[in-house]
Length: 273
Ligand code: ATR
Image (cartoon, rainbow, N blue to C red; front, top):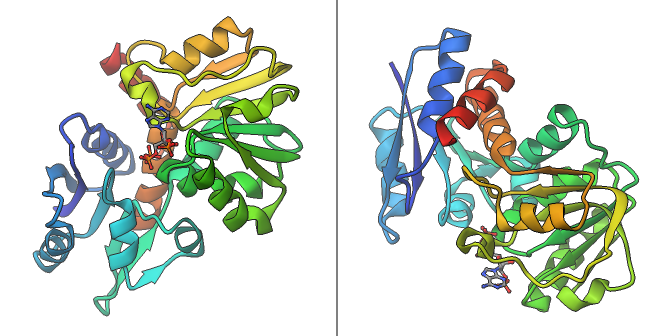
């Protein structure tokens, strides 16, 4: 069997082994995929050891995505722009390659699965951490009318707006920078949602057909999803579909086969409930 793994810390709740097992069954690929907890100061050694022992591909999750970008010798253009990597592999010459599939996963879930539009939409992004850095380029490729990034630490939002500004119209500010605007698509990438918090965004900022997407997911609607519903969002989704789509793109990078994601999203939804 070919060996794959995901490295993270914490890693206990990772759904990646289940997702890749389901893809492998569909595509008739024989593989083993494990979730491994790596100590914070041991990442690079663990990566080298994994590939030296014959590992074929690695996924990388919090908090190692930036470190993974730093240890890859070759980055895909989208990973170079994101300076974050969630998918690693070695080529025949032993060169370590890194890619990031999160942004493609997000866009595919919104556009292909949910049928939402990004093109020409006024987009609001809540949060300015690593997750946003990872998804901005594929998002900008969909040609939104504008993107406004709000964050508690305004400077982080401004840095992202500057760095990715070559790809389109991006502005940045604090949570109070949006009071008299409306948005057609709001994406939440604020990890405070993990503890059930929702930043204080003013009411009335959702346009009539506004879609609200949370990168987080869980058995219950997230704090952001509840906020969106209270503010009469037209459509609301959590990030479960993105999780499966980013895995499908990693699967494609490694195996050059595209699994069907819809049955796996449904299977996972059943496990979460
Ligand atoms: P991730 O990989 O999830 O993006 P991150 O880089 O730590 O992780 O970013 C977390 C995001 O959630 C940031 O936008 C962060 O805001 P700051 O940049 O101001 O820190 C936001 N966040 C986390 N906890 C928060 C809190 N209690 N209140 C407001 N924002 C919070």
